[in-house]
Image (cartoon, rainbow, N blue to C red; front, side, top):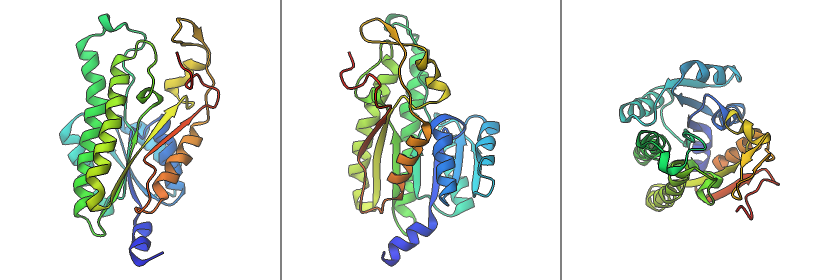
Length: 257
């Protein structure tokens, strides 16, 4: 390992959005246990502190953040840099499914806008802030990992807003990856299917299928997702996992519909 790579491995400062629950909590815990310093971002400070308390020996910073608000995102990255000195990793994870089971003709525009503002606009705002910091810091560079979804490939029934944002996130990932090359900013995406979180708990009892049936679906341990993200994060900036798909093995994805 050369001197530049050694310096990068010693810094290891991460920002995780949506860190108060689910995938964000699991990834935060995995990174803290691996020695990363982590800024935890989310809308509820109490749940962020609960996440941080799971690894009391870890170096963490809690910053209440609504990623859909530009001023909140600016404050998040300013606080992270003021506290830790730099940003080496952004896990762009915050997201919402929106109202489930609503036919598109009944989907309120306000509900559509909420999903778009959180899943897509929030991801852009965080990526832009990370990009600006990573471009200017010394050593230059860093990594952004966007949380896509199986729905970036194939939709579930009645999920127009969520599916549209996740398809758009794939395009954002590709564009950021290309634009980041001159500045040693590596950008990739993890597409997750049926990790066991509060959001997916109902799937074990029954989820709508493309043929109109409702059927239970298998789930996987969210810790397996966290380990995958950590692997992507640990790579030297000369290597990148552009897209990774991790899912419950028997879930209806291949052949969905």
